[in-house]
Length: 316
Image 1 (tube, rainbow, N blue to C red):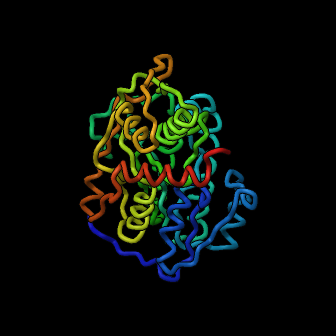
Image 2 (cartoon, rainbow, N blue to C red):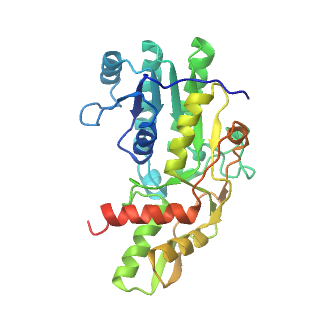
């Protein structure tokens, strides 16, 4: 792969999903790029409505688009709301990608997810594993939608020459994460559980499943940096993984979170809850070969995330 320079200087840039964790981080990262930022709140623009999206994009005419808008959540949310996770995500990405072509947008980055890969993919997972085996059942609906988004970008590139690219981040965490225990991912959920257990003086903390699955975690500010790097430097049909480079068991993650939060108790395991995929570690050799890698280690990132949680969410 070769670098394909693209300048953001003076460009009208739309971060779709700017109020979410990823969108907020990308917006912060773009502050130093001397571009013209375009935003639209959910109140002002429903991304699932095709006509509304077409009208707004025709009026604002974004030249560069970061497609970070999505309906997201952890195992419980994915498994209990399959129709919403499939349909809403399909509508959002289809409306934006197709309209980007119609208005002649110069560049678009579609953000997928590492859950697009098969449940039992060879570790670490490289991009060629896509569609090589069955998906993890608990998040298959979200995964199918994201796979469709990848294929949409490739299709528009092939048929119309659109400079649409796709990046697949690993598990994310950081400021502006979702800390609702019913819909959050594992890391923010552990922060809330450990904090509440510490405040309540509890001696135990319950983990879902066996604690044995291995997961890779990427600080969201690092992902934002990778997204801007890709927009400015990459143009190609291949999807690119965005990872941290190493993984950790859920039990080990709980130990780090507990140490950061200050919870001194023991762990219990709810074996009635699913483990999900046994391991999910991304091979991001393609991106690394272009000159990018993450800079925030896991403990530092968790400490920053917990600090944000204390200032913005704790006690609500």
